[in-house]
Length: 216
Image: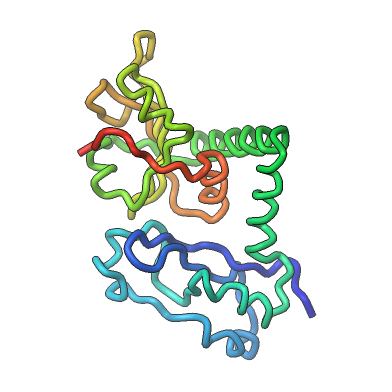
């Protein structure tokens, strides 16, 4: 029988070889898991090119490659499939109004999650960049606005996901800054890797990778 609540979620992102790795969102009976074992692999730290220094999230444990997700879903009768979730976003993006609404909603969720649940450790932007697995720059806002103290970034690192808000313009309150930058500082919020937050970031940023001047 199909299980509407059961689904595969991303647990980590490996920048070198595997990309996104997936895990079931809840435990299932051993006899059920036995059916899909061929499509899973029990990853260990040394299975990755550089240990896990180029991995964001939790790589160790039973993980499934993205190419095998649909096979696992079919065997377990999962109806909330990865393809359905991805197509929902693609369909929304075809309609200009729905696209804007989805991006706006994603931004509001991200702001709330990072500001209410995130931590704000002292950090240096160049250090985050050199240890990043990927950096998203929504609408090239940081690439085009960094010199004026504007722009946002989402930086994936082995220690979590950072939301960076450039905050060194003419009228900025620099006392709020906890991230050092060459331009004068930024506000940074950090959260541990999470499937929902990753999806919201990818929607809001349009998966636009940072392509500006080198940050380290």
